[in-house]
Length: 354
Image (cartoon, rainbow, N blue to C red):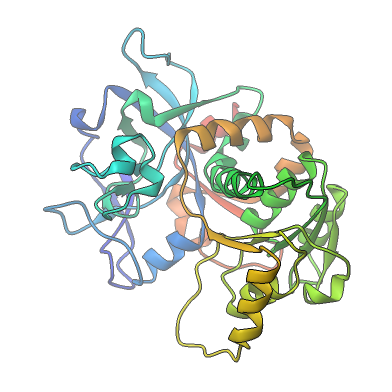
């Protein structure tokens, strides 16, 4: 079968290769891959900046945002041939740490977890893969090919869960949320904020293309200024860019008791001037909280699936801006002005049937 592989940490090594069929040790559920979403992490891996191959191998099959169709499944596992599924990315460490032992492997504390398509475990960008039933999340047939959005939505679902957990430390009725960044993660964060009945503002630099219209279609507002320019109290900030200046803007322009959740990873090498004393004073005296959030557990995938099922399908369809067949995978890496989410389709005919 064919798969998109790369030598991790070596730029320019991506290629479409013939590889062995997935081993039975990966799990009893055999899945035909329908679609693979391309995200910033994939671009880092393909660019040589990130990733680890499985032990004993030189190359890594990439792809962690998946959608597939079950071909084989053992009786009683909760899955049947024909079901649409999304593969969970992370696996617990083998020790395990206390978090992994409790089933909270997205909070692994010793770093020995593995991740499909990222860290020491082959990903989903192959024509077929195998998986254990507990790591396959069933997707409603009504969602169809849009189920490829489930993995990024799971990251956002976890972020919102973290915000709400912290908010319950006190009497808290958040009304106003700001999302920084109008990429797929930011747009899905805005969707879930609107679903919670909040007044949502999205801050991004783009002035043209589909993103401002997608925000408006949610009933949210779109701005190219700073968080401070919005005026008024901000109860929740979901920072989805990793841009250092936006991180500090978020921390400086929130209401007392506000929660700031960081989901974007900042690149190093850029120095910023910050009044650390004033920031510390504000956070202490106004009970503000800042939390980082990454990856997702099974319950976050399930929460995300419910959020996507409740979302307008025509709006979700607009998030998937391009679908590229596996043979033309290089086109998926091109950055175009009207791109939101680009998807690689190992089985494009199958996607058209959903």
